[in-house]
Length: 288
Image 1 (spheres, helix red, strand yellow):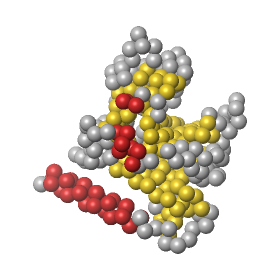
Image 2 (tube, rainbow, N blue to C red):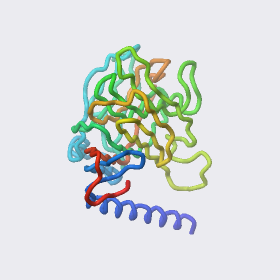
Image 3 (cartoon, rainbow, N blue to C red):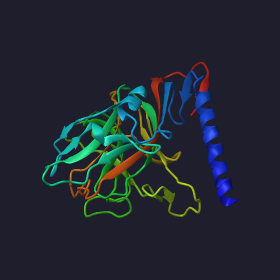
Image 4 (cartoon, rainbow, N blue to C red):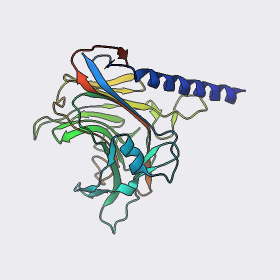
């Protein structure tokens, strides 16, 4: 009976979420708490029904997301984004980082990005982290190295710090000027982002958290499951850019650590984006 109750609760939650998404299609302006004005566009990519073997590129393209490729000259080991490392799993889009092969001289990694560029947004990603050490999992807006805001999980330092990397999830605005200093907070985890279960939860169902960034002209505000964990008011990006999700490693002991010795998979269940900023909310207004 206990298991039946949990299943029914999950089904009810899914139905409520589906209804909410349908209701939001009729909104003219989406208003986000703490942001003056609102957003006129809403997209929701639900990957919970996908299965392995389908085309990731085709599915993502239908949601305005493309797969990135290219060699990134990180040190001490470069990493290579390849198309085949963005793939469909069981109910998720998976970003794969291959176990490092020293003979290749690079870490084979994964990245995808919105085809649209936008200035200011609320982006909400439901993501299950990899349990493989030595990987960076990024969820961020990127125009260039001086116009960037990030949520980053470093799988080697989720709960314990290394010699030069603090434990927790990183919230960062990169410096607006070349040679400047970034603004960041490191937030301790209160749950295991890789196991899918709260450390102190007695629930039997899998838990996959939502990581949200609200980006406006005066701040970037970071939430985990709707709870604000960080707010940055300096080095706030001022230029439009695409949103990116990636997983990679460089073997840097003062960042990614690693490289990974086993294949790593980051699972993305869904992506919801509010964009098309307007300073004045009008028409049918929805609080989101």
